[in-house]
Image 1: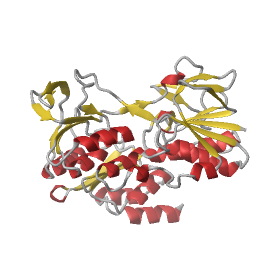
Image 2 (image 1 turned 45 degrees about the vertical axis):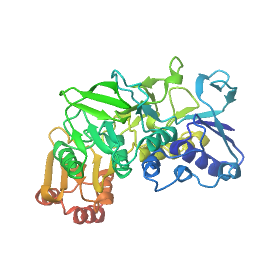
Image 3 (image 1 turned 90 degrees about the vertical axis):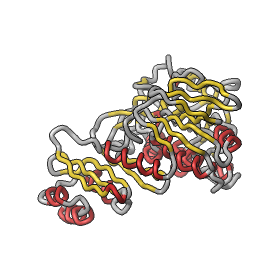
Image 4 (image 1 turned 135 degrees about the horizontal axis):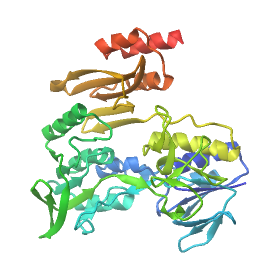
Length: 415
């Protein structure tokens, strides 16, 4: 059996390892489009502040690891799919054969339609090559503009400040991380960053980037102008599935539509991670979940079903994000924005940057936001994923959202 995996990120690597455990004789090939060994993008912030070197970003530290696992790692960019001959054309290279194919190509940065976005002083923070450019361009006091205060932007924010940048953040939403945090939570996170010396500009957009001296002048929609020696664009990502356009693989919102077994509309072609248009556990609806825990869950399921189709059904991934921004932990779980007709409860300590809000559908906990609180991470996920009926404990949580452990113990003992 020939298994071909396109994508050398966490999903691709976990899928390859799972397949090897299931079949010691299978041919397994990972195709990645970057020259470095498979690495984690989530480790790049630690590279920027010299906590690790480039080798520290590698997903497997032993340079002979993949060879010993009998997994071939090939460098090249997938150009097109030939389902008749079951091959993938590699740009400027040969075609790779497969019996089963997993597309785990992840996502890529969105380039906002801003005049000057292609200036040499503008970069994304997505690859090791980007990290090298940022590291070489930042010294103590270097003025830097970060476009976007979403999840990705906030991951690298602390690294930029730690590296010495004089940082200005421009976010089009009315708060930081608007797709993860409610208005109170996102606004408190903004205040936290402001207190740490970061200039955060929300409800505004970058309208132009113009050359000025050795750097650039960043203009915003509210009339501000910020001089910078480096601009980092973190304005979001989109699925990396362009090479499948025109094929019989069905794409939805740029992602690959998958069934309950992680298979696409084409027999023998599977998808996992940021590129997969998969099921949300909480809602049952389908969409893109561009977070690493989902990618890894997808990868294990897809590998099992590539080995033996129909072995494991995908019940859906629990949407959960945990973010550390300059020492302040924020998190979102499930349907954190609430459901129609549902109830909510919150507890706020603005002076100490502590916040929790819970969302209920009848007597079930379906979502939550937290800020400055880490002790309930597992309990919140467990209550949401378990879909427990809380009974009278719902009202107790409405009165005091901190009684989560007690509610969890009562729910699990009763089930």
